[in-house]
View 1: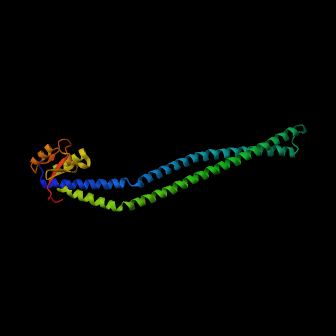
View 2: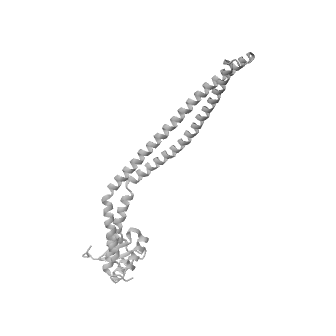
View 3: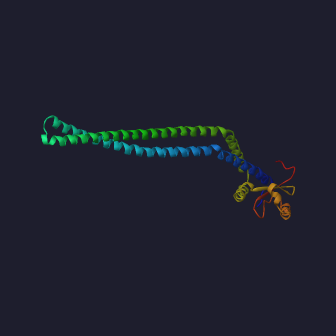
Length: 247
């Protein structure tokens, strides 16, 4: 395709801007804060899940305490009723011994139930304490995450400002180029990434262009300056420069 040589030269600058933008984005994306935040967020999620599990433990144990309390109330009520009958001489003499034996059994049952109640209440308290600790740890880590994010933003403030300048400059430069040439450049970028454009200076390949064969270099030399040249193997755009070309 036809393209003014001055426009072709702009492709070298456009590629430099794209490479700079990519480097700045990589610097931002590879900042160690990202990995730390992901790690901390995982710990917060683990603690939150554990706290939810503790809620189930607390609920189950609380129901157990309620069941024991209900049982204690029933046994206490029956004991009081039976003891009252004895105290009020409402029990035949022949049945007193059996009733006193029943009351003794209820005393032992009450003692066991009260021990069970204390143990269950202690388990509720322990589960609640564990849950509170999990929530506090999660809140502390969440605060650390926010501090890390703030530090990250401070760390990348300068490079972000540079990135904005690069993007603005790139947009302005791309806007000056003919649409077909810009489209060809974008196609070359999709094919070759950061090396869409290579430079041949005074007939010699620069950088990766040094791998061009003598035959292809000759074809490049014979190509009119206003004709865009794409390498045969990789379809990279070749921009021809001279030692005194403004750069």
